[in-house]
Image 1 (cartoon, rainbow, N blue to C red):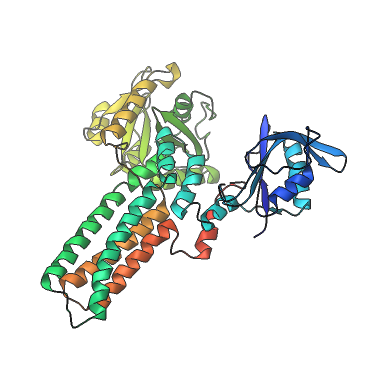
Image 2 (image 1 turned 90 degrees about the vertical axis):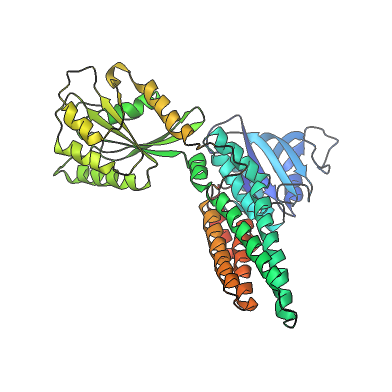
Length: 456
């Protein structure tokens, strides 16, 4: 296998930047590049001992560095690994990496270090995916869940499911191989009960998927309303910064603005949309269409109405868009004279509460934050489960495994031939194996690791 190299720290200026090499030539490349401060040391041989010196190309010093060699198999990739700690600017990092590539290393593909860790048995596939989730986590809860899955919590659960299937398959295969010793009614009933219990266990895990999505991605929150009702002001107030342009001119926001905020470990993925109204402006109309489309994937809608303006058809359309959606109603500009037809509006709200707010006077943001916490904590979004499903690929594989098990259950109840039921149990095994990577194709692996950052 080739030796790969990459910059493993983020682009930009920093105190330290790291270059990582992995593969059989990693140590030879380091020894060619590295010149120790200690004149008595001509080469690096000891594993896990940090060395201080220079990276030199002939007589030119490229950077002053610390370097460490880590001997296989006790490394991230289970290969020989070298890390060089350079100054964090892109010029020294780029020059040192380019020299390593000249000496025989190959540029690492996105996620290739983690892919090698998977291929070499250091991690299974669900653990490898948890690495990227850990890097991109946006909340403490999401971070904890990623760390849990990296330690193997999901893998252990999936292995338990597969062991249950193997136990049932053993009985079925024995019956197929020795048809003269038919499975008696007691064994058939036992299989039905065991399979039923397994389906229930998978169902319980699948039930965590929605919570897991919120932990990983945040609560997708669309801010909706007519032009100039205060949507951008609300975004800025929640962010505590002037992220969106605020003017008195209706239609200033033409496209969606997306930001993340954290409220007591609860992450909101905020989407400030174009104002909902009938318009002949082609660009603004595109923005309105995108605002409506954003609702399709929203976990929550915050709808703003201006109490200083009369109730209009656009307001009515917005209320209609909120039907069957989790929403919070805000009546903004509460400090101004009220011209909204209160009785008509409250009738259309059909008993739903609203929050009075005056964004100009920065009044009402705290009640909104409290309402958000009540809304999601009461519904136990952060209930104390031992594990949450946070990856859509895992959800899909579990659903397919469950379908196969349900098909097998129907066959057992109907006393179908055991070779038919074996096919269903085998299919369930394969689907579960996709989660940990035991039964997955190279094309899927390439797709998964292509979404990683280079250097990890």
